[in-house]
Image (cartoon, rainbow, N blue to C red; front, side, top):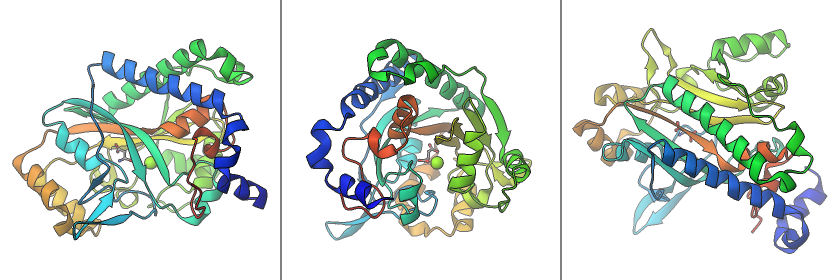
Length: 326
Ligand code: ASP
Ligand code: MG
């Protein structure tokens, strides 16, 4: 990152009044409204997201969680509200929240142009749903949002209005293994048991002009809460949606492990300290419904819709790894 850019980010509070954010933030506002309208029509109820709690999402790709001292008890800032989503669907079977998340990302993510350490996601969960059903929901939601924003923000989108196309449904689906093969054919070899690295994911994204799914990531790459594939437990019933044109990851989600014994087994395999999850495991032991859901990053969606090079131009007060900006 150039030192000029770094200074710019640190001094955002001085430049914000004339840096052209207005159009982007109007588009973001319409984007959020369009998602809310869409989900409410689909029968979802919006809840207020938790911000702190005794445990949070450990499946955050090498980012660190933040612990605070809550009256003498270590508490976490939410890295995602996944554990709470699994709980709340016992009373609200179709639920969503605009959830703020904190993830202390590794320093090198300052260069990916799509990582923030403070971000928001529309986090949703559906009781008794399968991966296939929530993926189909995600496709309809993205198409609806793009249609709405294109009709409401013609002036604000400017040049991007022409190149932003409503995608064709159904979106293409690759398994993780197929994605690894495509990368191999491009001369990019990656280990078959981990995440797809940022630059490889960007290369895949650049090779597409429409959003596409990658399903069934390896168990070793993801959080304990995704269900293992029945016919091949080394892989998961999960998915990411990848934006085209180099914009990279849009959505992560999957089917949840809701069976107490299996869940404890998975937590142990993932090296989790079971004692940190007391309340969560109590609820699971009492019985929670099977469910599936996903999270879609609001700033990344804004970046994609506006066609912005950098994620920090999709948020008024950006927080980037290693940069202590206000
Ligand atoms: N917890 C996931 C994430 O934040 C999203 C999900 O599986 O619902 O990446
Ligand atoms: Mg993800």
